[in-house]
Image (tube, rainbow, N blue to C red; front, side, top):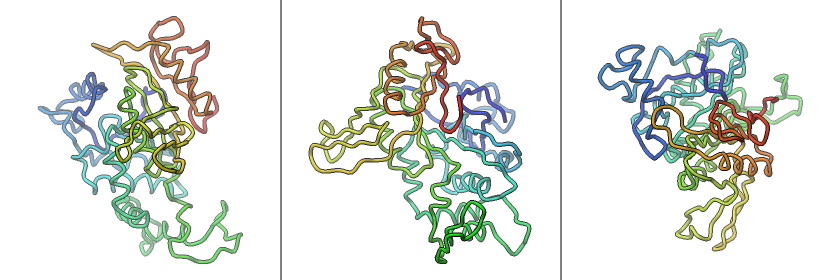
Length: 331
């Protein structure tokens, strides 16, 4: 369904509900919204923010005919411990289905979590081929030929180095699952974490950067303090004071040992808290974050907060301009 969240066009909530995990959860908008929906739309009457699977929402994106930017599970955390792996397989099966079927447009699915450890563990629990097979089995799609399965189509897409016209123009050798880069990581899946302060950024972003994704992003909302993404302390082998990552370029510095660079963030979202009891945000925090992103050529999206004059509003001006950059979208 369409959403008022500025960086997405739609939200998709096959799973709703969550429990607090850090400071950013104090004034959770999704929890407030769930209370309004108690007893309706599949939300429990007494405990509307319990983790809940909404089967009627599961295949929604497969029926959308125009490309959309989709915020997945805006009313919960997809990687909450109560969301079992088979439920995740269902959801990623739909995302896979949207990618492989020609009659479905190229949606972009954006997942945000405060539990990157669970997210990384899920993707590391099986090989890419095992995950693609599980997602294929869980995908609620039907092919025109009853003898052809979703897995058959996925397998076919990865057995040769097909060009954009579906031809083997390079004369590539036939290799079962040999060209996984055609579909892994899923090109239409972006993974992100929420980081409300420097401590949560240091904790969550390095885990995100170790997780396979077409694009990786961070949502610094609510922004509860200044955050430096260019020099992030990383606790590795007890050497936290000596290990740093530049999350915007992927440069990895470790004075204890040689180390390779890591993947980097592709997008940064920033915003203040809103609603009753909102905690204050200073415009210079957003300005400094924008400066960091500009220096690394990383798109920056300032969703809400104080403008250059300290006035809170949606899509405020920062340094005299609205900052609404999205990867792959012309501003």
